[in-house]
Amino acid sequence: MNRPDHILPASGHPFFGTRRLAPAASADRIRELLRHEFRDIGLPYQPLLPAAPLTLPRASYAELFRVSAALLDLVRRTALESAPTTAGRLAAYRMPASEDQLFMADPFVEERYADCVARPDVVIGPDGPKFLEFNVNAALGGTVETRCRLEVWRRLYADDRGVLPFDHHDPFAARTAMFKDLAAELGVAPRIALLGSARDQGDDTRYFDLQVDYFNTHGLIARFFEPEDLHQAWDCPPHLRHPLGLRDFTIPDWEELGIDTGPVQAALDHDCLLIGTQTGTFMSSKLTLGMLSEGRPWMSATEKALVDTYLPWTRVLSHRWTDRAGRKVDLVRHAVDDRNTLVLKAGIGMSGKQVLIGRDTEQATWQAAVTEAAESGTSVVQELVEPQTCRLPMIADGEDHPYDTDIAPVLGPLLFNGRPAGIFARFFGNGRSGVISISGTGSSDNVVVTL
Image (cartoon, rainbow, N blue to C red; front, top):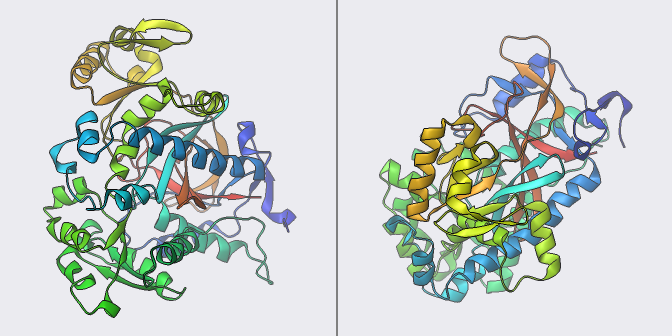
């Protein structure tokens, strides 16, 4: 039931609909609840907070998940057909040596479970959703953040009977269902090892405790493991083993912190399946989107139309010719000359790093970066998508009342083994646009619900 006192008219791109939610409490109350729920989970301080969840019409909300699942299947197929073996893919993608580790001994298991956790980054362009990249790994941002936001919004918007004026997917519930299915598929006990490190979360474990507590109260047996303790997940009596796990870390992050990945390889070698597997690195690479955007020989006409509709024009950058808007172009020359319409992205990168927006870059700097990237063959150029806006109430530090602003959100539909698991959103609370990263550029985040 939509309570009239919660609904306001909306403005912005039609994809966002004509209705939105009003704040359900005072600025101080909303701020208090959000700060409390987000304490000690490793997120940087956000001076600008949302005063209500982002909303989408049902059709828009469903479209994001429908297309995400279809494109993820194409991303998976593109990555796996780049070479018949892991060694061949490492060479084809020119992966750094640091990524040549943490693979399962059984290539079928390695490939079968690589894309169990995924989140594309989607902006709404003038013509609708455009999928800028796919993040395929269990350490992607959004799961815990979305759950925490939902806890606050459910508390504020539920009526006396517990009825909400919106619908949503719960990422913790979807992920728990995923692990139950995986345990049944593999014929193993539903005992889950949550692998991460408090050193990656400001030396606090609340980020992991929230996840373990949910697992343990919803039909699973879960435990958080630091890498140094991970041997206890497999070097124990059979009935105490943790045959499944969640790989909640990235190799670059642990390298930066000086954390040894040796215990992880030992667990994998003893048949502890950590979701998602290392093959997801190929699916996350921007090179995969470049290959998919250019078209693969096995794609049907329908698949090509889907890619043309939802992916911005993207090409792996090298000294060659390609097609652009129905004509053949020298790719490097085109990238240099059309700086204002393009973005340069490294194949592997996180948190908005290794991204250069052409129109925000001096011509000489841009040309040098394009030339260098063309030599390495590990970057893509991508059409710049002009992000469209929607209206959202925000709360600024020190202010007593929410203010309305137009934001240009990056939407992140979460998928767990194909299940819709909620939509994470990141944006600048002051209305500007650009490369968004919670940890790198001081943006805000929210959860998306459907009215």
